[in-house]
Image 1 (cartoon, rainbow, N blue to C red):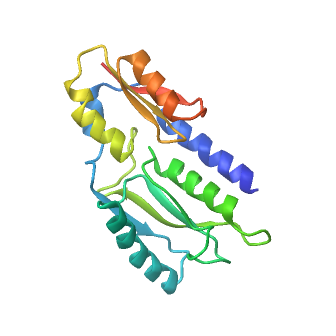
Image 2: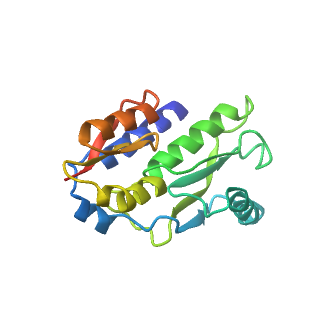
Image 3: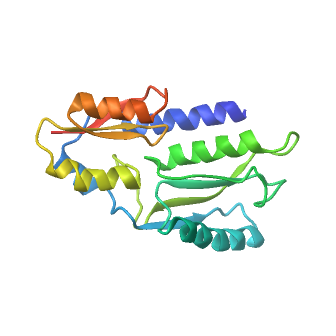
Length: 194
């Protein structure tokens, strides 16, 4: 069941980026501001677990020296709690579904044998998050605004739905950069092109 759920989430994440590429102008209107994120704590956590998230997130941000990158997720083993190797986070993915799948997979891979499957404890999303037809990670969104916007055509942004990898530049170069970063995921596609 766990493998099925992870596979289903990965397929859903891949479908989020599988649409036809949009122009840079359209993408700019769809993407959220980079560097602005908020944490949504899972209602599945009891009051103690929710309090733990409220303590953990500022510590994580302090260590990073910035707000947590969207799209992200924090997963934990309900039998082991937050202070175990099973607790895992996945940050800077291109969608909620991809971050969820990555955090859950990492958590389940690290939980002790015989314990219940991991659950999502929190999600990291853009400050004004709402579903949109194109979403990209914090870093990819910043690259669209800072690099892609100034580049000459033909230009493209390629993204991997399952890994958070991306590339910006001429179409072939953007795909090649994305594929190197995706470490064999084989799901890089051009999502923005002019």
